[in-house]
Image (cartoon, rainbow, N blue to C red; front, side):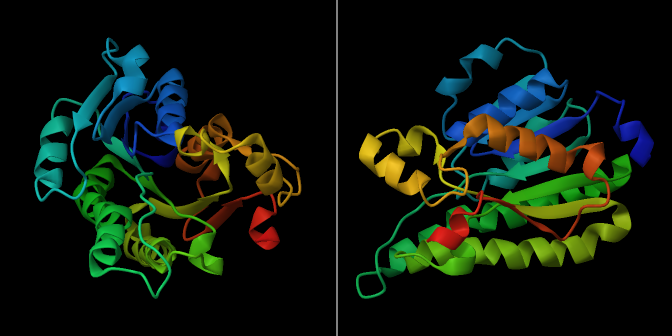
Length: 247
């Protein structure tokens, strides 16, 4: 598959982790509407009921920390078009300040936020190479650059930058692009319990004075895995609308 053929061939699969989160649901729906086949990986899929009857959608219910993740993902990909996109969206914010941080929360942060992205990259990269190329997007967080109250979360998100840059170097010769997306505070299920006062306060740190919408993240992801970003790799895309600088 050449670069040009990727722009018109709709027989292509996007593997999306964290698919039942707010950004994940938006990404699945948006890419499905664009003609992609979707392999959605998460612990549950109740928010993606609209796609359950589509022949271009397959759900894999799996704890991404499980040793069987790769075996189950490989089995789920059987019979699907070539996976030429991988979006590592799964994430978990656990832990406490350094004086209260437990070993369990530290290891769990990396087990969820970093290791699945590494393992799934190892799985799909040869498949992408055989198909002529592909695109991987790791979804990080601004706290990976500026820190946070929870060192476990910030450190695990910082690790995604190193993984992104290294795999972009490793895989570029196979026409596989790897990039990092840093979304700003986004309206999702995780933020739905924020009071309006808290939302307004956080929104003020953005140059646009509002929170990001999940569909804005989905459209950005579609650009990053699509043909219009064919020379974008080893890059960090800041989608914080300036809020990173307001922390």
